Amino acid sequence: MDGSGAYARSVETRTSWVVATVALIVLSVSYGAPLTTVVALKPIAEEFGATRSAPALAVALTFIGAGCGGIAMGWLAERIGVRAVVVFGGAMIGIGLTIASLGGLTQLYISSFLLVGLLGAGGMFAPLMTYVSRWFDVRRGTAIALISAGQYVAGALWPPLFQFGVYAIGWRHTMLVYAVFVVVMIMPLAALFLRQPPQDAAPGGVHAGPRVGAKVLGLPPNLVLAALAFATFCCCMTMSMPMAHMVAFCSDIGIAPAQGAAMLSVLLGSAFFARQFWGWLADRIGGLRTILWASAAQATAMAGFLVTQDEIGLFTISAVFGFGFGGLIPGYVLAVRDLFPASEASWRIPTMLFPGSLGMAGGGWLAGVMYDRFAFYAPAFAVGVVFNLLNLAVIGALVMRHRPPRLSSALA
Image (tube, rainbow, N blue to C red):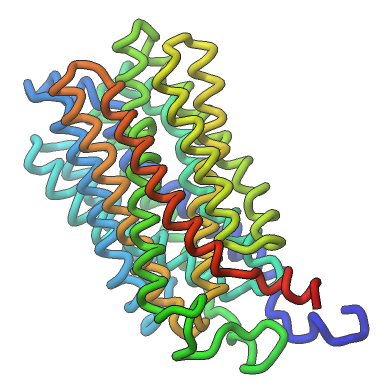
């Protein structure tokens, strides 16, 4: 680009951004599936005569299934292509929502774990993150931030619509209508646009990654991956608590469910816009430091849920919380691509993200259990702060051992 050949081997093209945009749409639609249960948490519990933790468990099972499926589907996508995996996943989400809408709690649990989670969402997030990261090298952080924001596009867009649907036609019909929408949207987009990615940069090139077998941060590679996986689990435990219980929490303190759904939209909408900032920053300071700063912002906001029940205050805290956690997942994915060889991305990324799925499942479920025990959410939110502090400790230790390549080059 500048005559020195610095960008000569970049894999980025206009097609890279088309693929990234399609991946964003696919994830925005697929992430709406578990939100149908989140928004209808209280009506589902009331219909089945169960505690609030019962439908919350279905949301948890979706995340557990998605995490387990991400590893297997990532491996499969390497062999048969991401297009087939995503088309299959879209069909499974549609079938799963249909079965859940027609049955009882048992059907809700089985379809959430097996169809919506393991076979459906498992073929979406981790495989698409790995896939899109191979279309980029110079602006990889920005691209990863864009597509991983699909979760927050879904969170900002779907809860008010689902709340209206639950009020107008009931949670079962709302879930069934969305099942049809998922199939109609995801399957054609994946079939038309998700083509074979370009080859990774040649070894020794400007954009080549670390060597296979080399130490990472002066430590065994798998030890560093395990530390990142544990940190992912901790931050996702915190992250999932307000996301899974915002509507119910607001109704408990006298705020209308519609306002609670709007608050959830603000939280996730804030995460979407913040994620673009974090992606831009990650391209400059690296994935690890991005995680550190984003986690600190999330911890501060989580503590804020403990000290206010004012509607305006909660809207503000929700926006700050979304700003913080918006940088976490792209930071983790970029950290794996920065620290490990590109040839290992297909299994290291989903392996690192799997504990995050457990954290998303465990946090939402634990908050429901603690609510059933104490009849208010403050103890659960306090536990969320503790998990976030554990995340900061682990990432801080890794950051102390790491000098970003861009910074090293600038100093040289």
